[in-house]
Length: 332
Image 1 (cartoon, helix red, strand yellow):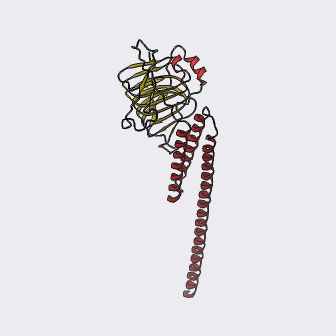
Image 2 (cartoon, rainbow, N blue to C red; image 1 turned 180 degrees about the vertical axis):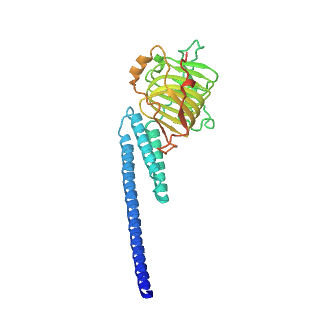
C-alpha cells in the first residue's frame, strides 16, 4: 500500500509540474502577443502621425502659392488639421511611451508656431486709422490725419497699430463710455477694427470683410455678417453678437457670444466663455447676409475647437452653452 501511495503521489507531482510548465508557456505566449500588439499599435500611431504631420506641412507650403482672398479659409483648414492631430495624440496617450508623447507634443508646438508665423507673414494686418464717429457726433463724414502713438507696453500683443501718420478710416480706437456706430456704406467689404475700448456699445450695421477685436473691456459689440474672419483677443467681460465664416478667440475671459459661424470656431487660452445662437436683427440684415456670402441656415455655434482641451471624450471646461432662460431675446 505504501508503494502504491508513493506511486500515486509521484504521478500527481508530475502532472502538477506539467500543468505549471504549460501555464508558464501560455503566459509567455500571451505576454509576447501583448508586446507585439502594443508594438503594432505604436507603429500604426507613429505612421499615422507622420502622415498627418506631412499633410499639415504640405498645406503650409501651399499657403505661399495662394491669393490673399483664399488664405483665411486655408489657414482655418490648417488650424483644424493641427487640432485633429492634437486630439489624435490625446486619444492615444494611454499606450504612448513618455518619449513618444513628448516628441509628438514638441512637433505640435512647432507646427502651431510655423502656422502662426506664416499667417502673420502672408496676412499682415493693415496699417490703418479710425473714423471717430459716435451717435452724438454731428460731423461724422470729416476725414483727418493723426499721429498714432500707441505705447507698446499698453498693447504688447497688438499687431494692428503702428507709429505713423495715416487717415482715420474704419473702426474705433481708445474709446471709453461711448455708444458708437458704423453704417453699411462705411464698412461694406472693409477690414474693421475695434481696439482699446472700455464700457462701450458698438453697432456695426453691414457686412465687413474682416473684423478685428482687441483689448476690449466691459463692451457690447453688435456686428452684421462678416464675410471672412473675426479675430478677437484680450476681450474681457464682454458680450459679442457676431456672425462670420470663421471665428478665432484668443486670451479672453468672461465673454458671452451670440454666434453665427459657418465653419468651426477656434479658441485658445480662454475661460468662462458662454455661447448662444446669433439673434441680432436690423433692417437690412438679410441683404447683408447675402452680400457677405453667409448661409443663414448653417450655424455651427456649438462647434468649438478648444486648443487647450484635447480630451475628445469630455467637454471642454473653458466654454459652455448659455442657458436659454439667461439669453437676451430682443436687443432693442
